[in-house]
Amino acid sequence: MTKNYPATQSVQDYLKRIYDLTEGGCPASTNDLARELKVKPASVTGMIQKLAAEKPALVAYQKHQGVTLTPAGRRAALEVIRHHRLLETWLVQTLGYAWDEVHEEAERLEHVVSKDLEQRIAAALGHPTRDPHGELIPSEDLTMPTEDCTPLAALRPPQTATILRVSAHDTNLLRHLNSLGLTPGVHVEITEYSSFDNNLTVKANKKTTVLGLNITTKIFVQTM
Ligand SMILES: [Zn+2]
Image (cartoon, rainbow, N blue to C red; front, side, top):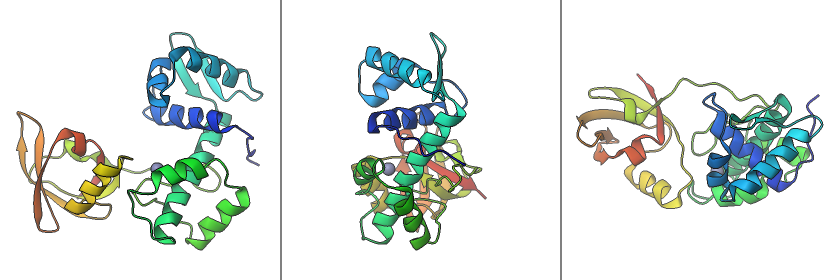
């Protein structure tokens, strides 16, 4: 049985950030965490020590080597991420929110959703596997599905691909991408690459747009 860890909102936010920062396989530094959580490095160190002293420990921490999640910490992080992504899906599919309006709501609600409500939302939506941004939703047994994806920035002409997900929360950026028709499921074709500034010219839905690295590193695709 997976334990429903009675973590506070602040603990859940830490675990979620550590999950994001360690996804690539490297420990998270306290400075990175401080920046992401917008708190002082000294408060991060205090919280990390607390999380490491929990029974079971939620993080493993060694000074100068950074922080990683323990299996218990990872489960707790995935539970909050599951809540967040299910809530975003529910807000878009059921309540008519736009994909750029749901992140802040989900940030608040993710901490208070009960197991029962989570299960009912998942069932009502037909157990979705991706949220409105295309991000994978951890399964009910708290495993993160795997996917084979590439950042759009790595593509060169004449490659073609399908957008899997957009890794961004910025409302203006999401609106901009929506207006360009660059959303999950859309087929894109790379027509030009500029080696001077790494800009890509991308054709999608018959529209051609030049995209810079700030955008092409946030869009993840499956190449054809
Ligand atoms: Zn979100």
